[in-house]
Amino acid sequence: MFCYQCEQTARGTGCTTMGVCGKTPEAAALQDLIVHGLKGMAFWAHQARLQNLSDPDIDLHMIEALFTTVTNVDFDVENLAKVAQKTVQMRDHARALFEKSGASPVGAVPQAAEKWALAKNVEDMIEQGRQHPVIDPQLDPDIQSMRDTLLYGCKGVAAYADHAHILGNDNDEIYAFFHKALSALTDTTLNLTDYINLTMECGQINIKTAGLLNEAHCARYQPPVPTPVNIGTKEGKAILVSGHDLKMLEELLKQTEGKGINVYTHVEMLPAHGYPQLKKYPHLVGNFGGAWQDQQKEFPYFHGAIIFNTNCIQRPGEVYKDRIFTWGRVHWPDVKHIDGWDFSEVIEKALQCEGFQEKEDKHIITGCGHHAVIGLADQVIEAVKSGAIKRFFLIGGCDGALHGRDYYTQLAESLPEDTVILTLACGKYRFNKLDFGDINGIPRLLDVGQCNDAYSAIQIALALAEAFECEVNDLPLSIVLSWYEQKAVAVLLSLLSLGLKDMRIGPSLPAFISPNVLNFLVENFNLTPIGNASDDMATMLG
Ligand code: SF4
Ligand code: SF3
Image 1 (cartoon, helix red, strand yellow):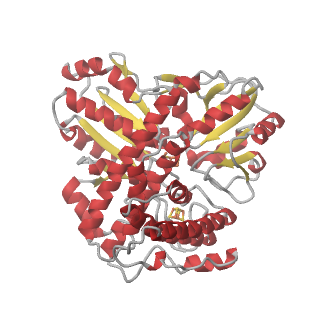
Image 2 (cartoon, rainbow, N blue to C red):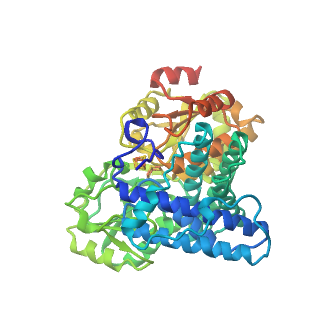
Image 3 (cartoon, helix red, strand yellow):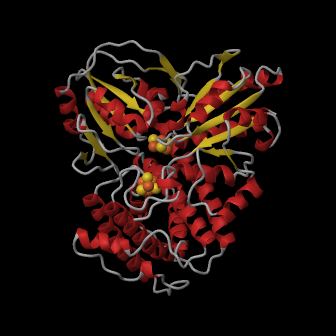
C-alpha cells in the first residue's frame, strides 16, 4: 500500500505497510481501486455533460464514493468492495449516457475509462486495486503533487456536498466540477498551470459547497446563536453522536423524545447546540470528551450507545465495541452499521446501558457563526476603532494525534488580552475549554462552528473588510491553520483561491506537496509552516 493523504502519514512520507489510522493494506487497495474507477466514471460523465447530458445517480455516486475514501471514514473491506462494484456500474452507466449523444469523446479515452471489468471476488479486487496505486513513478513529481492536491481537495468538497445533499441542497455546477476535475487527473495533456488553476477552482467550488450547506443548515435549523454547552453529564440513559451530520442528529433527537435518553455531542457535532431548531430539544444535553483522537481513552467512560455519522472513527476498543454504531459513509468491520433513518437499535442499546449520574461541569460557548458575529458588527467595529481589539486570530482546522499540536494551545493561551480568537473545526479542542474572558462584552473566543463553517469565517472576514473599506489581506487578522485530513485541504484551497496571504499551517506540511509546489505557495501566498508559538505570535503581532 501507499497512502500519504493525511497529516499523520507514517514518517511524514507515506503509510506503506499499514495505515497509522488503522487502514489495512486491503482497504487501501480497494480505496485506490475506487478512485481509479471514479476517474473513469468522471471521464464519461464529463463527456456527457459536454453534450448537456447528466444523471443525478452518477453525481450522487461521485460524492458518496469520494467521501468513502476520506481519512477515518471507511475501514471495512466488504463495504469498500461494494462501493468499487457500484463505481464500475456507474462508469458503464456514464459511458452509455454519453454514447446516447452519438458524439465522439473529446480527447483520448484514458485507461481508467476503458471497459475494464471488476474482479469477481474481494481478494481479486484487492489485487486489482494494487495495480492502480496513487503514485505513478513515471509521472513528473510536481504534476503528481498537483494531481494529488486536486484529488484530496475534491474528497473534502465531496464530504460537504454529501451533507448538503442529505439536506436536499444540490448544485449542478458542483457536480459538473467533480467530473471535470477527476477526469483531468487522467489527462496527460495538462501542465502544471492547468492543475494550479483547477486546484484554485476546487477552492472556489468548496466555498460554494460550504455555502450551500450553510444555507441548508440555517434554513432547516435557523442560524446558530451563541449558546453555552454543558460539558458535564445529566442523569439518565445516554447516546453520543460523533461526526458532522446535523440531519442524522435531528432524526435521532426526534426518535429519542420522551424515552429518558439524553443525547450528547462529540467533537464536530458540538456546534449543533447553537442551532435553535436543534437546541429546542431538551434532551440534547451536552458535549462529551475531547477531540476525535481521544476516543479510545474516553469512550470506555461513556456509559451509553455511541454513533458515528462521519469521520473520524478509530479502531473501537473492546470495552465499548458492542455499543458503537456507524451510519452513512462510516464503516468499521464488525461494527453494526445503521442503514437509513431508523435508530431503534441504537436506542435499544442505550436503554440497556448504565447511563450517567448528574455531574456538574463547566459550560463552553458555541454558535458564533457569521450571523451572530455580524450581528455584533457595530460593537466589534467600535472596539477595533477604539483600540480595545488590536487583532483577530483565526486559529482553526483539524486536531490530530501526532505531536506538535500543543503549538495551537500555546499560541491561543499566550495571545494578548486585546486580541480575539475565531476558531472552527475540531482543532478548537486544543483550547476551547480555557477561559479567555471578553472585550467590552465581546467574547475573546468565538467558536464559528464545524470545519465547513470556514465558509462562515470567510463571511466574517469579508464583512470586516467591507466595514473597514479594505482588502481582507489588510485586516488586522492572522490565520493559523491546523490540518489533518482532506476536508482541511479543501478549506486551504478555498482560502488560497480568495488570494489570502501570510497564512501559517501545521503541525507539518502535507507529504504530497513537492518542493517546487511548496515554493510556488511560498512565493505567491507566503504560506508559512508554523514554528515556535511565541516567535510566531511576535511576528504576527508585529
Ligand atoms: Fe496513512 Fe493517513 Fe492514509 Fe491512513 S489516511 S493510511 S494514516 S496517510
Ligand atoms: Fe476533525 Fe476528523 Fe478534520 Fe471537520 S473530526 S475537522 S479531523
